[in-house]
Length: 369
Image (cartoon, rainbow, N blue to C red; front, side):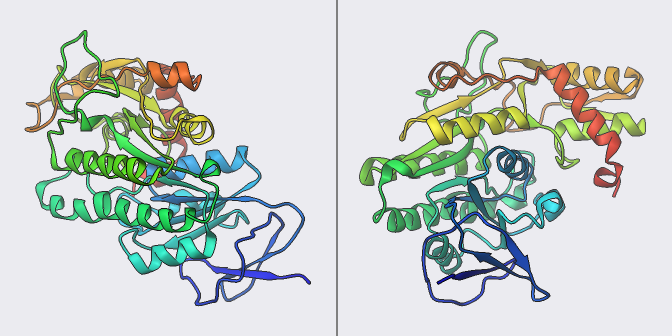
């Protein structure tokens, strides 16, 4: 007998949990907005993505679905800035993408999603606040960045207790900011470095990493943390550094350069997506992986590169003092993921900037609103 499974986009229906078997066939869409998934021959795996309407999460989802046909992605995002459903329009009607508007801090909703879909794989992109945000955002950091992770881990432990843990994975997208210290020009952070966050945002990410470690140690859950350098690429919001430079260059507007001593690593979001995929399939449970590009550049030189690509001139550059609480240099030793998982970024910074500038030129509606 053929069964039909129901999942509503944006709003979950009330239903009994009939089965944990999801299959890769086709969906039919009715006027109600309900998606029907009919049982077929090819079983698929379920990947739960949180924060999938954000910059990194949405790029990862599009990248992943094109290359992994035997997966369905369940994507939960509460759609507050900088998250935007516009990043997902390309896959809005995909039969392999379920979008649910919601907060990972909502215990009832997250519990329902785990019982309904029983995901074997989980990637947490969800994040509240940023080191670039003003202090009035800091009080909201704990709910998503710490409490949300705890909710995910508790539900994963409950569902995975009935599964073979060898087939399950949880990846936390962390940040290089958890290391905190300003480094001299010849030093690099390794995964074993002490956590020493310098901002409330970084402290919340470090706390999440420690929660994951405790669940790994106590319950043997297959969790991994990825501590990533700065990323850039399509669909990034204008208030982040590279998009702000690109938009200013295209408009001929003045730049604000914090300091020519600020040095960062930059990684294109497509290369980051590949690193996440390799960790998902080949990473060692319990491990931490630094993900850097091995390319460092000062903010001033980065602005000059973008001006060179867009044809702008340096007379529009303005320089200001470094922001309080910001480290002057982040630099990661990425040998572990390069050696153990055979990952290395393919796009060099100049090439990635050219690609990104072209995307912004081709999509003025994204940044001119």
